[in-house]
Length: 145
Image (cartoon, rainbow, N blue to C red; front, side, top):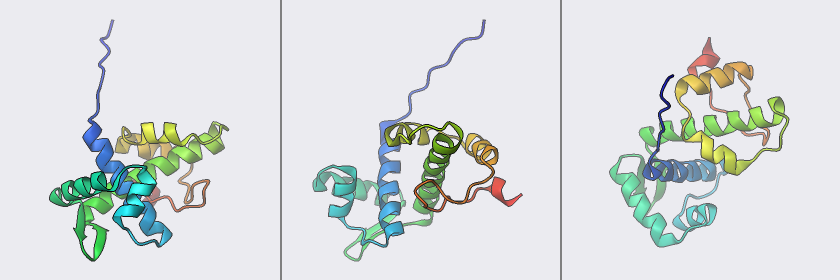
C-alpha cells in the first residue's frame, strides 16, 4: 500500500499572492493602487497593508513609494500566475462542472496549482481567452502551441 503524503503550504506565501492579486485587480480596473484601496479590497486595516507592502518591496515584488505601488517583473510574474489560475478555475466551474463560481473555493485552490496542472486545465478547456467575468486570462506556454 502506498503512503499518503500531506502538504501544508505557508500562509506567508498565500498572503503575498493575495496582495499581488489585489494590486493586479486595481491596475486592471484602471484604479490608483493605494494603501486604502488594497485594505478595502482585502478587508484588512491599513497598518497591516503598509507592513506587508514593505515586505513585498524587500522581496523585490513591488516598488512602493510616494508615487504609488507598482509590480516589479517578479511581482508581475506572480500576478500573472495567480490570475491565470483563478480565471481558469472559474471557467472550469461555470462551463465544465456547471456549478456556480465559488470565489472562496477558487481562492483556496489557486495558490496550490502547479504549472503542469494549470497548463493541462487550460488545454482541457480549449485555451479560453476570457473568464466568465469577461476578464482576460493570461496566456501560458500551452496556448502558444
